[in-house]
Image (tube, rainbow over all chains, first blue to last red; front, side, top):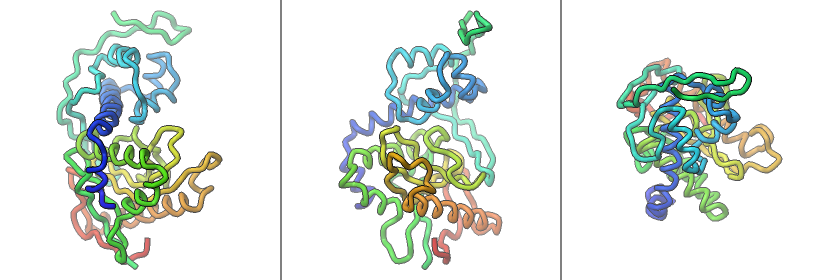
Length: 124
Length: 163
């Protein structure tokens, strides 16, 4: 079966569900890059396991509104799944260039640890 | 028997150009053959793959997080589409940044299969992409192929080698 036939078979609602999950993953990815955060950094910041961050970035995660609120708070970015413009990056060894199309995140919050023993953080 | 790299126009968009491979004796690409093979057994999963690829092409690009990286040799870009843990299918490809994705074939990953080397179908699919990556790298070095900034492959996309 040709791809065009498959696309006509798939309902628009099914696409919107998948696209929303993947859009959230892309928004997290862009916000992490804008802040220079690795998966491990974000995991520490949010007191989560790095494997959870990997899952969030995969586009397979159904996010709860609580997790979206947490992500928006810690990344100080709109993590909503609503349509936005993304950063396009060319990172392969044969082609190394980064083209920033649009990235307009609000000012980063000042984040400081409230306990040096546990990974708990607060904004001021 | 040779093969060509074919653009999947129905899935490609501004964010990412998506290509697959067609052998000279086949009208269908490896991606289409893979989807056909598993369609009757896993229709929802096949639709999920199509939807993911459509999103990457139109909007999100082929981001690192969407894939299992380092499925091939160091730096060759060979990846597998990262699916939910219960998802039984593995699809292999080559990722060039977020703007270009070349998809090959794949197979069903058994519960006890940890790596592609443990399954003959997965092994064959992954090794195809490893060989293809090496061939494309050589073409780029020989200046017979250029990867454009929008993700398009420009130049001679036909290969005489068997994949």
